[in-house]
Image (cartoon, one colour):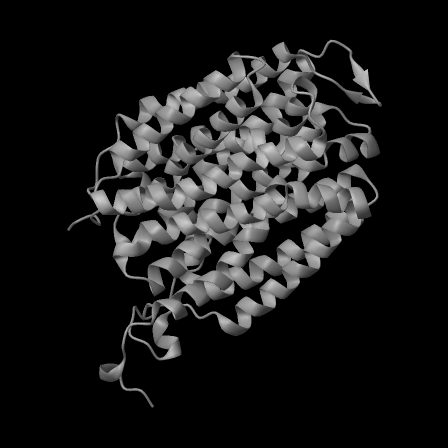
Length: 433
């Protein structure tokens, strides 16, 4: 038997393996998050709905996701990532199966709602594994890699999903993704452990004190505790203005916009929209690592937000960009939007260590407020500006309608830049050090 004195820190390959199994659930969460983008025509045709209804169907994922964030952070502090991730994956699988098999719009919406609420635990669980299994100096990098893995899932929900939908239909394709999620849940339960000491390595042990029950009062106490620190509310509002435009465009409205106004076929439009997500996946780890390396959170965050804002202004209000230029703008927008990953390290360092799970939940709630609000709001604006055009029974929206809708996400992105000016730099040091 290995004595405590003989234990060594877990090798990075072991840490990455444990973390990677948890991250596979986050990959599936992102896949489900953006899957409606390549099924807009099929969903609108099958259920005879317009942009506002489709926006709300897609946003049901975000409604439950956001509602679960603060409870998730508090539950995570008591349950640990293994139990949190495996149980979340099982519930997500049930939601995916309901979404794939239900004949009516209401039950499809219920499935979407269940998916969002259950996958809400994925990112928080991955960050907990990162905190438990990796040295603190690698936290920003690993958080960025979580975004990278998630966006791999989003890329799979781009052209590959579109090709599968074209070949097999959207229901069988989504059904298979539900079965894969069941396998992920089982793998996490069998192979993942919360702390390195459970596999015989040195590392943080589980808390000796029993976690309090998660009820209304403990949730409210957690919220009050983290809001006592000035950065928390700012870092709740800011990331929605970075993530919201990315997921509103790539997750729902980018494909129909590119098909209508750049005359691309849906597969080409999906590939171009997916490029934004690939760039975002690359930008997250790079900017997370640079933030760790420089010992500063605020300057990179401000710079990334400002560049992202400029790209959206150019893409939305300069029509008929050459395709190469449009591609370049989307790549830069995605790379710069990777700055949002700084939010989690920034927030974690702004509160005491015992509130890390709660503040992560609050911050992730703010991240998802962006697409939750913007997807249906843009859909509402599109329907409001619709001029009656139809093609194959599906509504077609003018450039002016898209500019009005996308103007909402630009306004939030601008607000994020302003609010960042009021944050307090942590210099990559936990509170009190």
